[in-house]
Length: 226
Image (cartoon, rainbow, N blue to C red; front, side, top):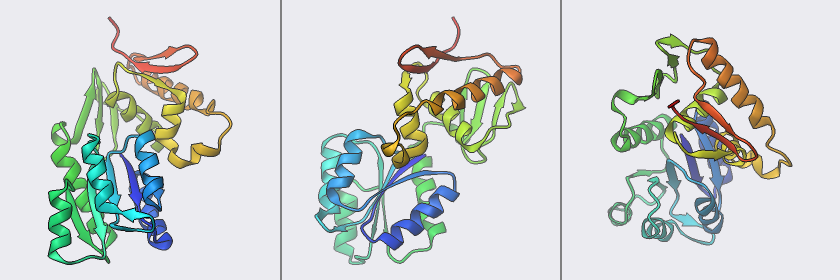
């Protein structure tokens, strides 16, 4: 799952981001209204953790903008504002949840999971593609019932392919999904090739078919053979 954390308090942002990464999320951070708006225009996120008081704007206004533009990301407001009026405003403007600072990080994690369960079309947190299954809770992936020994990046890559089956994914899009902000300063994303190669080999070695096709000069596509 890819999360955008909009928080101007640097120490708190580092703490939240570090915790979420340990829980196997991809977490990007924006410290201002404008930076968050730019990221949301360029990338897709499953969930946005949104502070209200930002140095160059108000988080509620950003929330209104997101909903006006049809952005479907879940939104959890994280704010020190504990007044009922703030909570009612945030929820009425389209936030999925509101949590007041300070909060235990496990509680934030539980709220994120609860929201994604409600929005997910997948029953029992299982996604499938042909004979491939992936458990979103345990992150175990199987081919024909056989467990795949995947790295964390390979697991995220497989889930990204399954959730975008039939779509051509560029190497740049794959890199941005798996590494987030870290790709901004890279001159090349050729390393994506090795990760895709390793994933394909592990699937076929386990007896599965190679459903990932190369779109030469562009990227890759997950397709079922005709």
